[in-house]
Length: 129
Image (cartoon, rainbow, N blue to C red; front, side, top):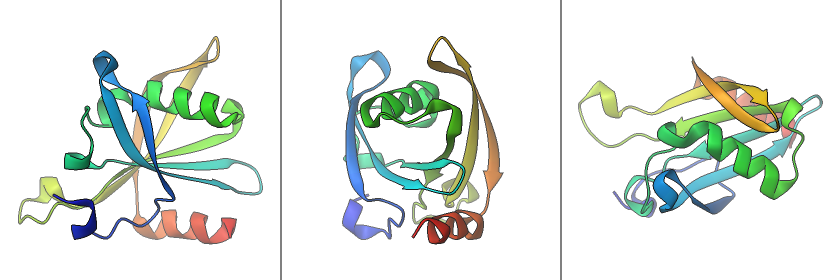
């Protein structure tokens, strides 16, 4: 899969980080300020990502993003975006997950995923503009 082959909405930049096992990794990133929270959308990039998936590193990734961008960890709304891979298998369909974390000593732990819709994500992005 090539980045230009698919519609990657919700990406303002490519974020580079040291992922699982300190492997160079990348994800698509969008950060938007809402009235009461900071929206973070992290998009898996599959073949464009030399490291592991966001899902395997989500708590650490959320911590890194907040630290790098100096975001208030108490007010984030983190979304893990899994873009569609063109396939007939349901496993490869686009999905969005609101990921909640516990915050322990400034580090996110215990991720908990809740599936949300593209429409819900789009509404939040629209509200931030």
